[in-house]
Length: 183
View (tube, one colour):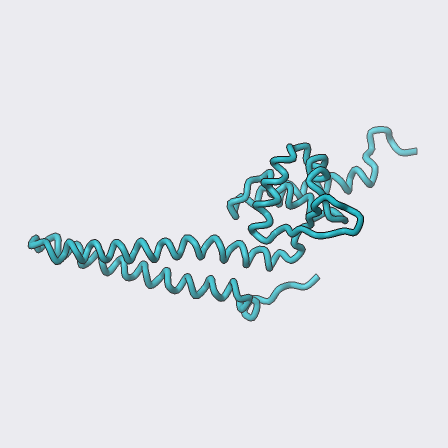
């Protein structure tokens, strides 16, 4: 006869899955996703069926508004998609099962935006420094500006390289160099 305080296999199973969902939630902060939205993704990932906002609210004990915001965030990142099931009128959602696809989409979008901004800022700084260079008669300032323009050009070259790297990720070409591991 089992001990009264011994956990059942289903309880152990649920604890194990919950621990992994916590790990997902914690690691999602690396991608700019809050732990609560990370938990939502984890719950959807381990769900055997698509879930409604009400299902998610019940599973996570959070407001329906929070669930809606979380689903929208995950949808924009292509980590969750809406689906249809005959006979159910409410919106259903399921997780994107291909983590490689999710990562490449998320990484590409985030890094592209920041890198494009950095290129624009470098170009603007170069332009402004060249304007000062043309106006100024201070030789010491000329040297400093020329040195800093070279630094900015180096930074811009790096950002251009990074854009090519982002393209390799977004296009899926990265998997030619680092293949996906299949199940």
